[in-house]
Image 1 (tube, one colour):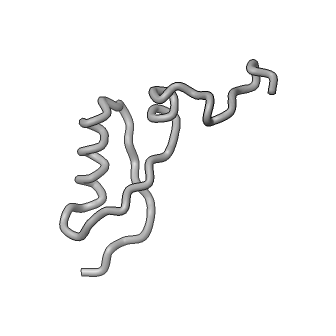
Image 2: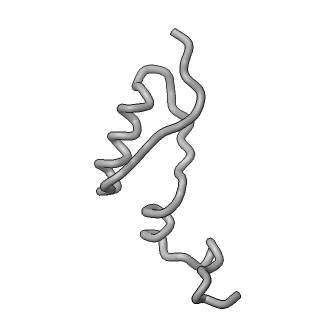
Amino acid sequence: MDESHGSYPDKREINSLIRNGIINVDKPPGPTSHEVAFWIKQRLSLNRVGHGGTLELL
């Protein structure tokens, strides 16, 4: 692969994977998706974090 066009995921630095990737979280009942996204944002010192997926039934 021509590295000017990117790199293989298994060759990337962990910081690059965290800042430019997706983290799948199997959220337990209780905390909201918004709360979990906020915790991840704080823990990993990120500027932007979002969430997507199915909504929980009450």
